Image: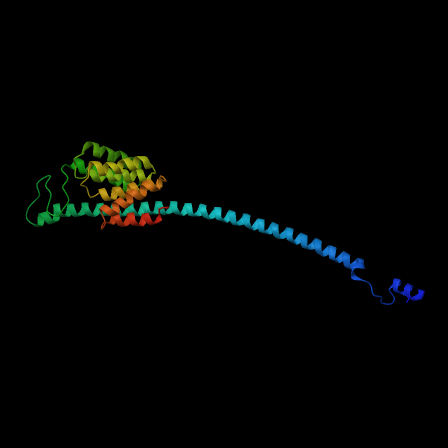
Length: 253
C-alpha cells in the first residue's frame, strides 16, 4: 500500500509521527557515538587517578620509612642518655656510700681507717688525694658536658693510675664520653678495654651493653645482637641484661 504524496510530505516535515527504524535515526547514532567517547574519556581519567594515587602511596611509604629511621635514631639517643644518667647516678651512690663509711660511720665506731684500707661493705678506698682529685675533675667535666676535658681527664687518669680501684670506672666513663660525642670507634675501643683490662670490674656488664649499643649505632646489627645476647646470658639478673633485652627487641631482624 502506497502512502499518498501529502502524507509523505507531512512525514518528511515532521508534522505527523512516522515509524523510523532506530538504526536509521541519525540522532540516536550521534548520541551513541558521544556516549562511547565519554566512556573512553572517563576510563582515561580513572586510569590517571589510579596512577596518581599509586604515586602518592609510594611517596607516603617513602616518608614513613624516613620517619621510622628518625624515630629509631631518637630512640637510640634517648636510650643512651637514660643509660648514662643511670650509670652516673649509680656511680655517685657508690662513691657517697664509700665516703660515708670512711668518714661518718668509721669515725662513729671509734676508729679511723688506715690509708688505702677498704672498710667492710664499702668499695675499695682510693689512696692519694691527687688520684681522687684527678678522677673527680674528669667526672665533673663529664657531668658538665665538657666532653673534650672529660676525655683527656679519664685518659690521663688511667695512664697515671692503672691499678687504682677507680681505673675501671675511669675507663668506662671514657667510653661514655666518646659515645656521647658519636666517636663510636673510639667508644668501642674504650669499652672493650674495660672487659679486657678489668675483667673483674662491676663495670664489665655495662661496658658490654654499651659495646652492643655502639655496634647498633654503626649499623652492625648482627654484631650488636650477638653482644647483647651474650650480656643476657652471662648476667641474666642484672640491670645490664634488662637494658640489653629491651634493645634486642628493637634491633632489625
